[in-house]
Length: 278
Image (cartoon, rainbow, N blue to C red; front, top):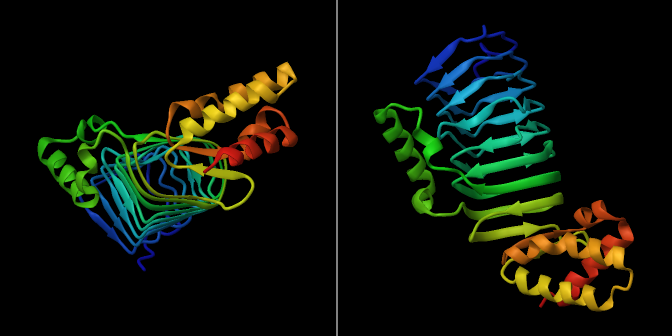
């Protein structure tokens, strides 16, 4: 491990371009307002690293570890960058998390609250701990290379395609392996018609509807209309499930229903969804 960057303050506006950092330890370093452009990071460590307004433009991270690092004010995947085989442990995540791909990555008890993940390809990604108000959707391809030279844009595109195959041209984000089995979810929305290998915790607080969310929700909707006598509670319940009528895929979350009313209300709705689950 190369420790020359550990506990180091890198002057603001310092630029690193078109180089590789291999086995470098950036722990406890201050790299605020530093610019990394078209840089590859391999087997690097970022522990309690200060990354305020750090620019990672067209950067790729492989087998890197981020631990106790505040990433809310930086963009790891900007300009087409990607992450593979990376670990994020107790980090704070940027509300807008753009990256061309996430492959074989683990997010272990990171602060995910009101985060929008935009990407082309998620493969074998695991989330652990609480996640609240999360949206996952396709990244606009124009954002990948619009600020690069033609030559660099071609290199970025080639690298992304090597990792993601046909995902580059797919109309939706391609998801192949998304593990929430050790996560506690509240308000999560995934906008994709290409979903494989999605898991949620096998407990009373989560229910995964992979193919028939619309039909099941419609049955729940009708049940509420027929059998819930209290008008105000009935109205709340119908509002809670409204968004599940729009997609064949849904993750039903106890904590989302509890947010609108209370635990009894949430249990009642979860029971209904389980009732109509084939």
